Image 1 (cartoon, rainbow, N blue to C red):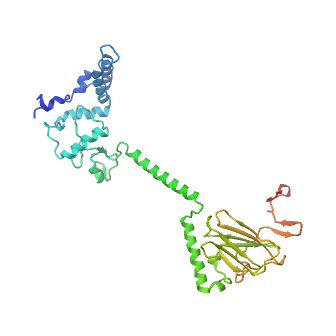
Image 2 (cartoon, rainbow, N blue to C red):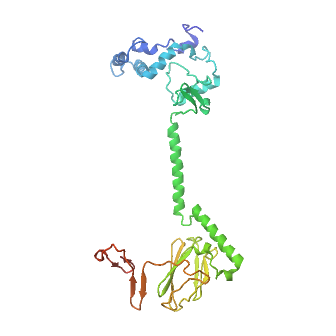
Image 3 (cartoon, one colour):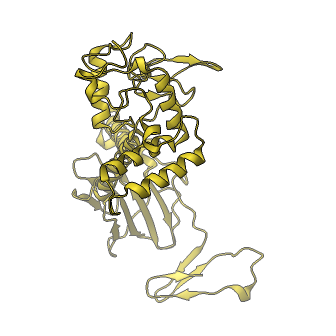
Length: 376
């Protein structure tokens, strides 16, 4: 084809010689940035549509020309394009660039329309991929190499930058990735919140603890039988309770791994033995006392709302008797919590005694007694 030929497919190509923007502003190609700005102001005042005699179409051409020539990088691309106008693609006249395919060019043209790529509407300059020759659609941030979609999936090298994976940022790509991360984070937070709001929720550690407890409880009953198991100390099950004592009471505290808010916890106690068993679970405690519990006084019991913590105050049949162990078969002092204070109980009074650190002066100690609490 011949560059100067008019008519036919060339009628729609206004910037045939690659000098349209300079012609619109009335300047030469070697004009400085200051001359470009001055020419734009003059032409803008002359053709501004708000001014009498102005023309919106010509003003748009002036604005478009300044957008390209007023930007150093875009002007450099435009000038480079003018030197290689043979690479321009005009349907029906100019052949496509060697190495490109019709399908890829069609996709590129569609991207220009849908994605709003910055391409001068009067030209169809195709920047080719430096790896395979297809139309380039992005640039590697590491080495500034122009590459296509296919070549973003493989490594390349350029100049001082050795073999590396492309680092690209498509329009909106970073926002899309951040949005996905935020959505995933929000999804996990919502799922976690719903789990915590469920009173019967158990995390992985607690579920593992439940399995360990059931395995140990069923194994003990299967190996020894239910009767003998009541007199056997098994550390795997003993870790779920602790006890303390005063002259008049045994205090028992128990953690129930299989306790759930919607399931009942059965507690049975007589002077000789105690059973604490959640619904649909083996008993956490089913043992015989080493001493005797009084049948004359009531047993005080407390349960947490989620049915996982249980405490009981058991009155001794013989006040003043100090137990060495809580259940028969236990080692002396096993699971016994020594309180940091001593309590003496009488009919009308309770005496609590404990030692404060030596560096505390008596005048600095304050005691507050309320109907249900004591603070020192």
